[in-house]
Image (cartoon, rainbow, N blue to C red; front, top):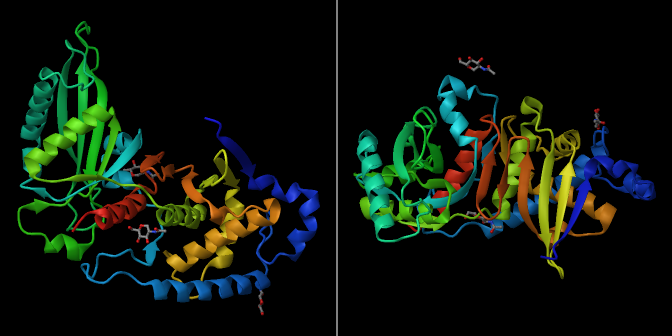
Length: 375
Ligand SMILES: *[C@@H]1O[C@H](CO)[C@@H](O)[C@H](O)[C@H]1NC(C)=O
Ligand SMILES: *[C@@H]1O[C@H](CO)[C@@H](O)[C@H](O)[C@H]1NC(C)=O
Ligand SMILES: *[C@@H]1O[C@H](CO)[C@@H](O)[C@H](O)[C@H]1NC(C)=O
């Protein structure tokens, strides 16, 4: 559709000779392999302080539940062996697909002990919708089956309800005995480290699993949502990921580089131009880590990051890009962030390629789902 795409690899930037002078003058450049000087720390320090002032002045709209606002610091992912607590086969289910995100309001009278019943009920509901001629994208003679299961061990606190995973399998009419049924749709509902004040404030009978991830046809997703709405008196809404969320992800992934090796940090910006311009900016992990280290606040704990650090990190990346290409990335919109651990898109799509940082990403997404929910 006439979209221009510019691919830029940070790795090669230090080889661009005509920018060599600028490179030397600039305080915050982090050419590959060189640690930022003391000078650069000072300049980041200044911008950090002014950012801090701006942020406190903006504040948050009062009136919401005291705890229900975006936190200003977060824990960094630590190497944790998820398979000690969660069945590896279930982790494999979560890391397989790209998931479309929605939020879902608390479910009334949902019971983890009734998953078998729900499997039958949803199955019957889909069959009825199909009979009414609704396009559910299951061929007429195809038999299908719905399974609900609990993913145990993913919950982070005792207030978190256990994750629920749903699959729709189909078996074509002429399937041979022994053919494995095909998964045509999957989805899951989760709550990782949900705001405890909010969770405890819910009237009894409600279960909060605010993040809904789906993979499969839109029509099946709609039917599943409809069944949830009718059965548990809940509502769904789209969950897009704004640039603040993507910046947190970029920083969290970079911040755990020494523990995990992120392999690359890739960011995509969309710039307002005719036709629209997508800039894809790939940063060598060591460069990203050096910049990250240079903006870390003196008093910050090793395992947490603050919003100020996130902002300084992004400013550093944008400043470096500007010095080389005279393009203000901040004039555009950050649309995608990826590392070897996964990717997140502003449209509300996420993909995990390993279980390593999955919990921390889900904590962030749970929080966004709760913030997005109408209270
Ligand atoms: C920064 O400066 C301090 C003294 O001002 C010095 O002790 C330290 O080694 C310097 N660090 C770097 C990375 O140059
Ligand atoms: C994680 O734990 C499981 C079960 O205790 C073990 O089999 C596996 O080797 C561990 N993996 C790593 C990377 O430590
Ligand atoms: C992104 O969304 C979060 C949660 O709704 C909000 O706190 C934050 O201010 C938003 N950021 C921007 C840049 O809109």
